[in-house]
Length: 370
Ligand code: CA
Image 1 (cartoon, helix red, strand yellow):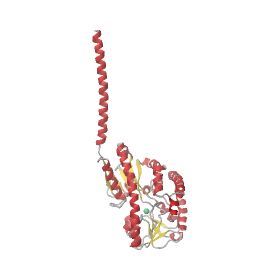
Image 2: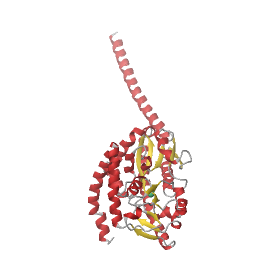
Image 3: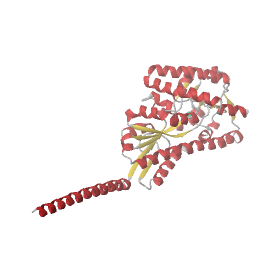
Image 4: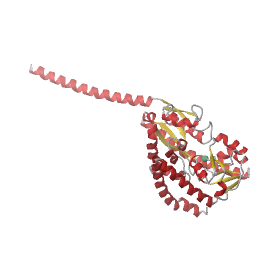
């Protein structure tokens, strides 16, 4: 009996041990299955943009981004890109991604100023930071964290994706010699830049890119800004105006954005998240570099082939516009607490950035006699 009992005990312990091993094995197998299922899962996403089909650099950059994500993910994340109007109208991209109709979008945060006035700081503000400053603010100065906080109530996760660099000041049919020359001027200039023009006595007009040339050519507007030499050349603006002014004080480094629906983003495995983030950073660099190289070539074409007269705004005009820009920003801040919060954070970074710039980029430009 005693031996039997011992044998029973040994057998029981053996069985318990076995089943314990068995359950460990099962756990491991199930973990492997989950990991395998995650790797095998294919995500077919849709992305809407605010750009016209085939719009160089902007829409093309987005399509290259989608292709790179597909290749880097081994076909696990496929993004079908729709240009503005192909799936939803261009300026409904924000709502489409926010509501989860589509997973991704690309545009510029200042398009949503009607909903979120503070969003303008994540694109460009008059006399604000250039592309280098914006990137420093986003990636190292807390700008991106703040942007994510501002977009969170809309179920959106934003990423910087592209920057136009300093834009041009615009096309005019009369010379701008003093701030008085802006009085009564009807100019296509959007957003906060438009508010500054209005303060100078001008009339800002909102027109889509496709409407600009005809309006300028027919005299419906007196002047216009668009992007930079490359896109302005493509629109043929040199045929409708004589004088081309710089710099684009109203858009000194226009950042573009990738927006992702928060729920869709949370559902991505970590490796795919990293692929998306890395591809967006890569697109930022490539798009900005394309703007720089294509603009410098187009500027030569405009000057040498089309005899466009290129002028710098007189310093006195820029000083006056800068003063009006500060007034416009202060007024917006007084109306909206969120705008004020982002304005303060942006300014704090900009002031330090300016101080560093004074002895780095600016000092170097001066050393070259520029
Ligand atoms: Ca512009």
